[in-house]
Amino acid sequence: MEQEQEREQGREQAAAGGGGAARTVGRRAVLGWAGAGVALGAAAAGGTAVALGGREAPSGPDRQVVPFHGRHQAGIATPVQDRLHFAAFDVTTDDREDLVRLLKDWTEAAAAMTAGRAVGEGAVGGIPEAPPDDTGEALGLPASRLTLTVGFGPTLFDKDGKDRFGIAGRRPEALADLPHFPGDNLDPARSGGDLCVQACADDPQVAVHAIRNLARIGMGRVAIRWSQLGFGKTSSTTPEAQTPRNLMGFKDGTRNIAGTDTGALDKHVWVSRGDGPAWMAGGSYLVARRIRMHIETWDRAPLKEQEDIFGRTKGEGAAYGRKHEHDEPVLNRLPADSHVRLAHPDTNGGATILRRGYSFTDGTDGLGRLDAGLFFIAYQRDPRSGFVPVQRRLARSDLLNEYIQHVGSAVFAVPPGVGGAGDWWGRTLFS
Ligand code: HEM
Image (tube, rainbow, N blue to C red; front, top):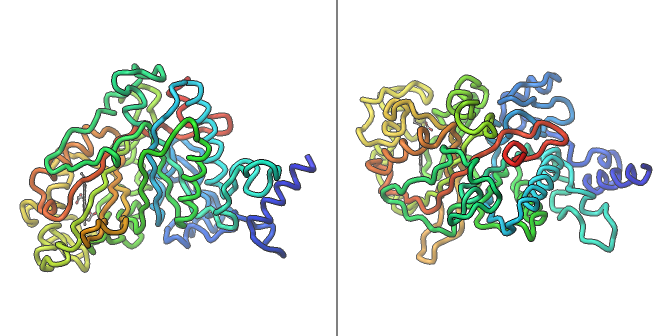
């Protein structure tokens, strides 16, 4: 017991990275939700827990921690953090028990890391003869609102006609393979995956640390298939915060589902009982698309053309014919094939998605062009009535298509949240 206390203390001290009073603070030292531009800060600072997508935002000294446990997984309705590290994994074992063990190990590690703690015995707390449980690069960093969101891809259920884990019969119909869309130029090496983990945090080092440690824990059971770093969130789930801009310079996320709009979340994002298999109730579906932007061509396009493409002004972000960013667009005032007109729910029989994407720049492509764009992420109750109809329309005639190309694609079933100690990611599917 004493030893355990000492270890805990050692971890905290190492985490604080120095002596004196700071020693006892560790990664739980906090800056607060308000510091991240989230309007929930005021309530949280007052010591009141704030309901958010079925989970409680902690108050007091844990304000920079997004609760891991809850009815829904964090990282969907959660106010969008600044950074992303997204990883898709191939499961390399065919043993169901191995996979279940992995999901339990991941859950335990995820609960620790999202709370600002190290994995297992930590980076420096274990026995000197063994590799540390935690890789260490997040020592001394606050939790940074880290969220980890897990998803199950179609190939987890059925790979080349093989039911590796005895769950083929539990695959939801909503987890259909995405159709081919006109203009798609998908790289298989950047598409698909048996599992995914979306790590979002306000500090990229915290997000990368989380994915790295999950990959390390999964060694021999999973291998990273592809991954994507994202910066500069391109969406907002907090309408009162300033809307971020994408790499084309436009405000992105103006009309999105707010993380506090429980009515819209229930209607469009969370899977409800009766939607399909019971194990998905409280979950959601994630569509990821790596969308390359032809930045250099875009940068030569006149301002008027750029604005016509979206049907919104570049400065204010107002829809054509309206004054302010948040004034409702009047669709027939927007150019016929403008992005906003085509993507709007009224054009698509009400189809509504929660967008949570990030910009990316992955160096250059060897031809003097930036390999940059938007890593698009959408959550919805059913992709067949969410992303698919919207993208079908956009792929056909969006004016934006001249300047973008979809080069990666994946879809995942995101199971419900982890209820508490003893529960684990995927329990409802595998029990
Ligand atoms: C690089 C690709 C893309 C860029 C640069 C982009 C940019 C934008 C911008 C600037 C807006 C207007 C501001 C806002 O309301 O958020 C917008 C709106 C929207 N976009 Fe995109 N977008 C892209 C791809 C997509 C894709 C692939 C989809 C879905 C299939 C999509 C769905 C939407 C929706 C639903 C809206 C809101 C329309 C409304 O209700 O007014 N976007 N996008």
